[in-house]
Length: 185
Image (cartoon, rainbow, N blue to C red; front, side, top):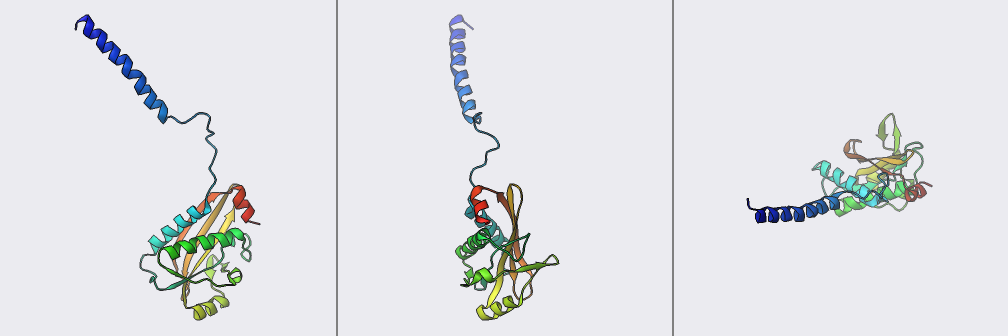
């Protein structure tokens, strides 16, 4: 190789190296961003994803003309109690079922419609049997949540009213943010 060719090759190599380094540095995370920070969670997005998974799992177990009634999600530590969060989660998931084409009935006094848990199984109360007859409800969207130190764990189930069989379910969690903590009161 002649000296002029060697110089040109060396100059090309020097010109290419910084460009390669710049590309690599752009993909590296910023050191100033704390690794433990978590962005504010949007409960609607998480509830919709859970409902989407339930709708997919549901398949043809429920006809699209069958009516679903959402019940307020209850606090697992006190099954007689719900909260604004329990009502919000129920409404968000019901909204997604509606968007998917399912018939969802809204009952004006739904805050009094709770499913009680006993012996590890959901038990439909006498009121639920009456609601099933009156509104021809085929399934109930029910759920519960548990508040831990820094997360909320949610279980949602779509339960057939005729026999109590769970047609679809989903378990999910979300970080316990200040907004969600306010909804627990």
